[in-house]
Image 1: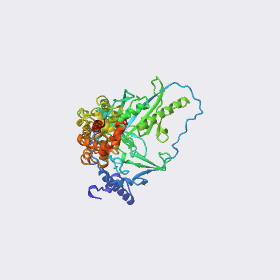
Image 2: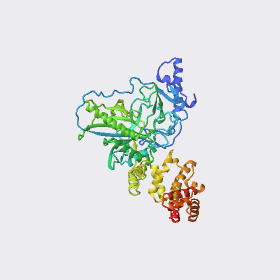
Image 3: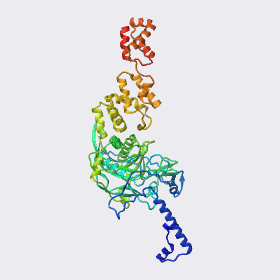
Image 4: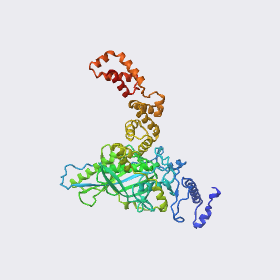
Length: 590
C-alpha cells in the first residue's frame, strides 16, 4: 500500500474500542485495500475528472461538455456478471408465463351497447443526437459490440456520481420551442424506482413533478383537415439497457436473456400528449409530424427500427358524447408508422368486443406482435406512485436563463408542416411529394439548394423523386451528386444538349461509377446532336437506303414515319435531337 493512501489499521481499531484477532485484523486490512483499489478505478471513470455538483456546497447544477470518451477497463465491469455470453450479461429465464393469452370466448352472450368513441394519448421517446450519454462521457454510437459503450457511471457501480450533459439540455429546449411548449426555468431530476435487469441502478433518472417543458401542441393534417394535438409535457430522462432474448422472441419462454448496457443512460426526451387523439390514423400522423420536427431540428435521427424513436399508446373507449375517460391499456413494441396504426385499431376493436361481451377492460400494458397482428398481455399497468418518485439527491435542480432560451429560439426555423404547405402552394408539388419533403428534411434541403441554382421546382421534383431516389440505397448524407451538379444536369436537358432518355442513362452511369452527372456528360460523349446539317445528312442516308419504304409511305402507309425516326435514332446512337429529326424528316418526305 502506497504512503499516499496508507491507513493505520491499529489506530482504527483503537478508535473503535473493540478487540480483534490477528486473523480478523488481516481480513479488515485486506477489505480496506480492496476498497481503495476500487475507489481508484471509479476515480478514473469518464466524468470523474469533473467535479459533480453538490447540494452541500453549490446552488447550480454542474453541466459538462458533450465529449465522448471510451472507458478502457470494461473487463473490470464484466467480472461482476454472474454469466457472460461474449460481452453480454445473461439473465436466467423467467418462468410462469407462456406469452399466450386466452382468446375471449365467442360463446358468451353479446349485449346491446351504445356507440363508443376512442380516446388516445401518446408517449414518444426520442434519443437525442449527442456524442456522449446523459450522465457520463460514454459514446452513444449505435451498433457497437454489447457493453462496449459502458463505464462505472452508466452501469450503476457504487460510489459514482452523475454529471449532466449540457448539449442534451439545449436539445430538449429546442424541441420544446418547436412544439410550442412553455420552457420552465427550473426543472428537477427524479429517481423512478423499479427493478428490471436492463436497469443497472434499479432506478431511472427522469423528471416527474417539474419537467423542463410544459404544455404545447403539434399541428397535424388528416385527410386535408388540420388539428392541433395538445401536449402535456416534455421531460428529460436516461434510457435503460436492452435485453435480447435467447430461444424465444420475448422474455417469456426464453432460455435466457442477454443484457446490453450500451443504451443505458443514452439521453432521451419523452413527449407526452393529452388524451387528445381520436383515431389510429391521427395517432400515426402525429408521430410522423413529431418525427419530422425532431429530425429537422437535428436533435434525433428518428429511426424507429433502431429504437431511437419509440412510441407507447394509451388507449381507452367511452360512450360517445361522455367526458369521463374509460379504463386505458398501454401498447408497446410498435416500431413503424404502420404498426402504430394497426396496433391501435386492433386494441380499440378488442376493447369494444369486451364491452359487447359484458367483460371488464383491465388496466394493463400490452405488446404489439407484428407477426400475428395482435396485442398480448405484458403486465398489469403501473400507476405513478408505484415508481416512488423522489428528487435525485446527486443532481441539483436545473436552472435556465432567458438568454439561453432566447438564443436557442433563434435556431428554430420554419416548421415541417409550413414547408409542406409551401411546396404545394408555391411550387405546385403534389401532396405526396410535399409530404416526402416534410418527413425527410435532407430531401427538402437538397431540393432547396438545387432550387437556388435552377428555378424550376416541378422539374426538380420530377427528376429527384422518379429517377434520383430510385438509386439511393444508403444514408442520404452519403449521396455523391451535389445540388450544383444536379442543377447543371437539368439545365443541359432544358437546352436540348441531352435528351430525357439520355438523362436517365447519365444518372444510372453516375451511380454505377460513383461519378458526377456532369463528368459522365463530358467524358462519355452523351451530348445530344442538335446540328441541323449533321442531322439532315443522317436522314438523307437513311432515306436513300430505304427508297422502297419511302414510296410506301408516300402511298399512304404513314406508320412508316416511326420506322424512319427509329433508324435515325439508331444510327445516331440515340443522340440526335428528336424534335429536330421530326421537323427535318417531315420536310423531306411530306
